[in-house]
Amino acid sequence: MSDEDIKIHRGLNNVYFDRTKTTYINGKEGVLEYRGYNIHDLSEKSSFEEVSYLLLYGKLPTKNELDAFNKSLKESREIPSKIIDIIRSIKESHPMDVLRTAVSALSAFDEEASDKSYDATMRKGIRLTSQVPTIVMAHNAIRGGKDPIEPSKELSHAANFIYMLDGEIPSDSTASLMDKDFIVHADHGSNASAFAARVCAGTQADLHSAITTGISVLSGPSHGGAAENVMKMVKEVGSPENAKDYVKNLQKSGERVMGFGHRVYKAEDPRAAQLQEGVKFLSQEKGDPSWYEILVAVMDAMKPYQRRGIHANVDFFAGVIYHLLGIPTDLFVPIFAVGRIPGWTIQVLEQYKNNILLRPLLSYTGEHQQEYIPIENRK
Ligand code: SDX
Image (cartoon, rainbow, N blue to C red):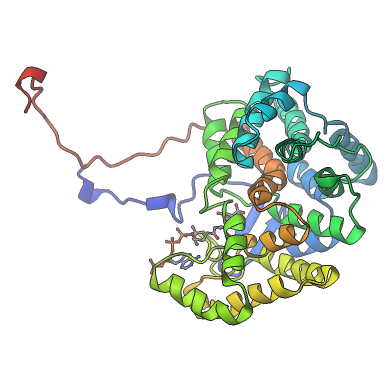
């Protein structure tokens, strides 16, 4: 078949490659559901632990089930001392590179690493959900010349994450906002990093390999890297009055406005709405409304883009939340990974359950029948 007869789907845009019962996204209406539960209900009424259970097991847990799940999460927060040594040896690297390396190395200390059974994969997914926050915060302490703070065995997932930043137990409102952030990041269908994790699982590679792949893909600025760039953008804008001109200059230079646009959402990303409430509240609580005001001004300046289906996405508000929580900017993408571990895990489990090698085609448009010329005769 010649190239002219072939329909190319660049970026696999609008291509369905399988079926799923985990996450539903209606990009036109701006709807997101995990296992049929609307993200607004889950963000406002649930917890990251309960949502992780829902994603992994396909149903909301009973109290006993949630207590047992919570217990296994809390018991899995430690990381081997040799992983701390590895983190020390690469402490100057970007936190996403350290996270990718440490998760990959963790497989050497997990006796179930090569076991791809459902139960072992589930247990590893739970362990990694708890170990990834510890890796992120251990590196942050080490690069600051401090000893890592031991993860709490009592605090919730979100509260423990903030606690490991500086040893201070966060207020309930702060922990609840971090919890909401993890909920809205927990899964999102076949986004680039989840798709890559599925490709990895499709070859029957193990969960550590698939999640290392997901972390690698998430680090790109077109995907998870956006939250870090939104904060840089907000600092460059500097004041709400500058937002209009700033956006106009970006447009003129053909550059993307970070935190806007989405391959699937052509209406508002429902996760952005949830986080916008959070930024507003946190800005007031911290007595520093300036960052929120700049975000709103950029949103206003971007209004004309809405008719082209370009709206704020999940990363637009997340960065300011982390900044107001005193989290260093280069930890913003690792925080996305912290929330996404249950999502990557269930995507891998779904792939394993009805596995097929994911191997698309490229249409060759190069030369044919080239004559081999010996090197001495080449010009
Ligand atoms: C995430 O897929 C997922 O689900 C991902 C995610 C998840 O939870 O896993 O939701 C998380 O990755 C959110 C996205 C974070 N990235 C950013 O905020 C970076 C900025 N956004 C853009 O790079 C872009 O919107 C993408 C990469 C997110 C999506 O790009 P697409 O779908 O490939 O769209 P495109 O590049 O073809 O753009 C279509 C048009 C173009 O204009 P034309 O060339 O047709 O005239 O929209 C324009 C683009 O120029 N456009 C933007 C824009 N995003 C798209 N213009 C200005 N600013 C932007 N941010």
